[in-house]
Image (cartoon, rainbow over all chains, first blue to last red; front, side):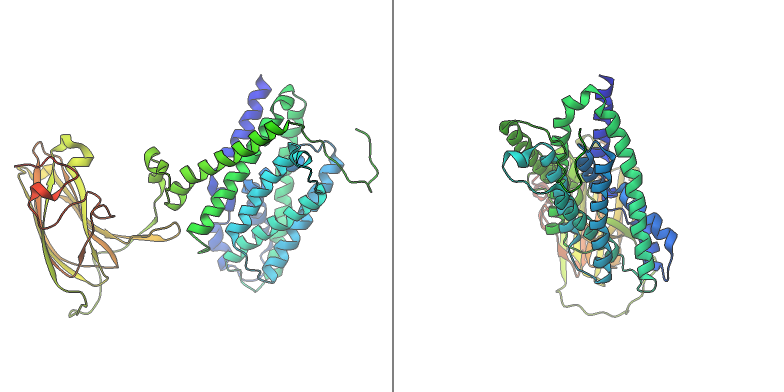
Length: 230
Length: 231
């Protein structure tokens, strides 16, 4: 029963983390970014990593993705696909100044959590709709990158040193993802060895599904009630 | 698990639940998720409360616009001004219960709408109170932002104990200006507020007159929401 409680505690933590963190470039960080001129790699590296580690919409998606990945090879494959996806849109989105509503992008990110949970539950097999997992993870990677791009764009990056800063931020995102992923992997691997995994796997994915709906709903409400003032 | 050639699609293990369970999880998730968003997140984050759950649970009180305080002791502007709005005068009699009436009866906020630069001349006194220490007022104004993201500009003019005040105010911004009155004495009182200037009254139930005070009627009829009228 101890493991049982442990698993619940982890899930509870993921669900209760303060909402402000989901969109973590704010306050003094935002002021810093807005004031930066020229290449400034390490601060941007840090910001990228921070955004990923504290962005629990990204983290919940990763939890969903590696929920049933037992082999390190598979983990690496999916994480590479995800990283390729979000690096592409992060760079292109900022460079070409693609104007997408951050609320709508974050809504899709929320839905990606629910999508993954639904798939883990065998939902797509049940309704007879099978999308190649690699395509789905890569595709959602593109959307997650667009989310990162809109956050950066909202801060009004200075064109002076844009590319190096952007690349630094992106590398930071990968480092942050690696840190977060390692932690999630350790917890998941440990949890899988316990009996509670079998009992709670369905419940965990049901909670993931719910969390995704809440994240998506919050962004949808924000889109209609606030618009894109930021 | 056997090793697969890399050309084959990788099929991670999935759970197998019955169609009924799946429907329960997704349907329940959608309903619960929507309820959380509409009932809790929207009232707390965006000041929108369609179900009234935010108000009922108190979650809606979490919403507050960012405040920006401004200096009220300095200001500059033309000494002679002209206004488009007509001059008006009102006498507002505000009945307050004794302190036993609690926050709903013994204190309230009364403000008026004013445009930036508009002037108000005021004179109010408390009738029925004996000790100045029993009566507190907070003379202040603020803008009225409606949604998250907008800042609320706040100006505090005077916070003190006392039974009367008279003077003039020039509004530093478009917004509502007025007083929070609190009676902590053991007798009900009436605050008689006389206003003259370029302002508009706030309709009952709106921010600035949530207590629903009616202007220009005797105290006994001025506060329909709280039927305990003194004297």
